[in-house]
Figure (spheres, rainbow, N blue to C red):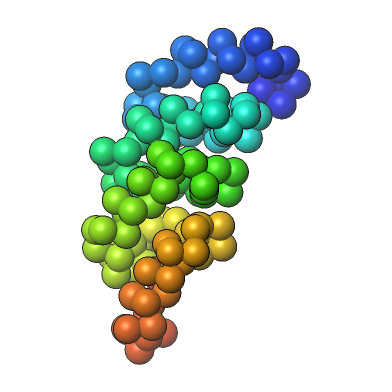
Length: 140
């Protein structure tokens, strides 16, 4: 439905999501709405998603539903300051856990394919430092 919505309708949906991003990203279906907003809205209008996830970035990067939102942010707005801060929060945590997690490794691949050069370099440094461990791991 959001693909066919006009700018005013998409803006109204985004306004209704303000303050509810954490709840929506955790939900089985709510993450779909956030993904569509990130895809549909101009970057400046969808930046609130990354801003609201900022304090919980590490958790969402490995969450069954939240990692979808994280990946869409990486795909459509990696250069946004709020998204960059979100990625920096994730990389400041346990990167090994991120790369070995069932859903976290998808977020890690998204950082590698769409992230800023400094984020890619930091993740690659971790991967290269423990290449034997990652070579044997199921998800890494």
